[in-house]
Image (cartoon, rainbow, N blue to C red; front, side, top):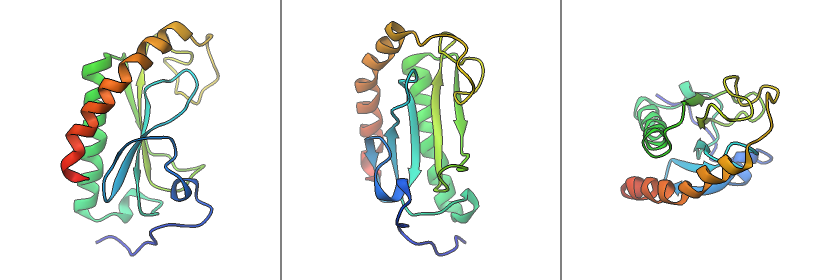
Length: 150
C-alpha cells in the first residue's frame, strides 16, 4: 500500500511546473519532452503526486507507471530506431518520482556514455534536427495511445 503523500510540495520543480513540453497528462502521471541540448528524444514520465521513491506507490500505481515507461520506450524504438533507449529514475537532484526515457544514437555527443557524462564529440545539429522532425508524429501517437487514461 502506498504511503499517503502530498499532491504537491512548494518549491519542487516537478510540482510547480510540468518540467518540459507536455505530451500527455493523465490523472496520475504525465509525459514531457525535456529540453536537453543534443538529445531531442529525451522524455520523462513524471508521477503527478509528490513522492520521492518508486516504492511509495501502490502495486497498481507502480504497474501503471512502468506501463507508461514501456510504451514510451517502445514508441522510441519503433519510430526512431535508436542504438539504445536509456531508462533511469535517479531523483538525486529532483526528489520527485520521474523516469527518464532517452533515445540514444551512436552519433550523439556522449554515446556510449550516459547523457550526464562529459561530452565526447560535438553535437551533430543536422542529425538532432532530423530526429526532432520525427517527434510530432511520435508524440501524437503517444497522446492517442494514452487518451483513454487521461
